[in-house]
Image (cartoon, rainbow, N blue to C red):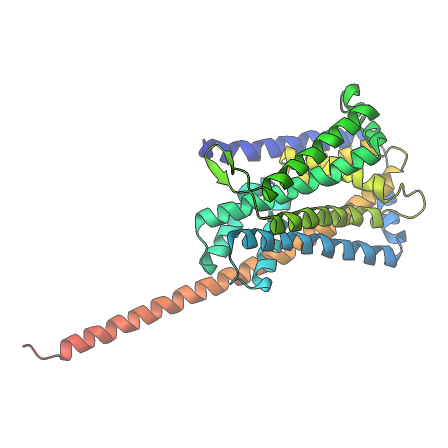
Amino acid sequence: MKRILEFVWPVIGVLAVVLSLWLLYGEFHGMAIGTQVLDQMRNLPPQRYLMAVLATVVAYAALAWYDRIALRHLGINHISLVFVSLCSFTTYAIAHNIGATVFSGAMVRYRAYSTQGMTAPQVAVLVALCSLTFFLGTLLVGGLVLVLEPTQLHRLGGILPDVLTDSTMARIIGVICLSAVGLYIVGSVFHLKPLVIRGFRLEYPRPGVTFRQLIAAPLELLGAAGIIYYALPEAGNPGYFVVLGVFLASFSAALASNAPGGLGVFELLFLKTMPAIPQAKILAALLVFRFLYLLLPLAISLVIVLLFERNRLKDALTKETLNDSAGKVLSAVSLDRPDP
């Protein structure tokens, strides 16, 4: 089954990209959109670029906190903050760009954390808890948005069935999301039985860990949405709360599609859900988001991976040389030793 999934996920991702790009082509066919987008990016004030950069730092700092929280749950304290931060940054930068976040994230993390003495089952729990942290954050922030601003789902009219875009239904969905988070908190506080999914066992974290999860995950989402908010010009900006709601829907759909970096899927949903804003402004903001949140971190992470692997190779060669030297010394000693 695992072998089949290795081929199925990439195929699904590629199909999602192709379909989304084809739909985007239909949106912009015959329009000179490229020049308008570049003009929007040039005209964006430097202070808004600076705020977008700071929002990116907040998002990735929160992602690093995901790993620290999972390590705390596992009772592992010997790994330095710098190592954890670099590992988390590299993991998410690569996974966000190539898709299949759980699988790709697990491989990168195991390669790194195994050098710190962690076992495969420990890394599996760490990956599961990080994914759960993100899921909890999405439920919490999404639930609050739907309860406080149920009209946000009206933006998905024509994409979702009408029954799901109704304000009453939106509030019901929001309450369900918040209730799920509440049940998780109850399970943590009262030490309920572990979650068992297809043989995989995940213990409810201690309340201190749960509390940190419910801060870190929303912080990451708020930071990521902030990049797009600040990349949009002030004139005609719909406001942070609207951008946050649209971001949650678009980002979740992009992750579900497994498209590498959500390419096409993310842009298409943003354009469909914000029709009142000129398309060039939206595309310019999304390009800034892609550069700051996806492409620049990916470039940096590749350098980190190369340096890490170079050091690992150097250590392996040094160890092999020492073993060879020790073997030669032992051989020489045995040859010089007189027969009894």
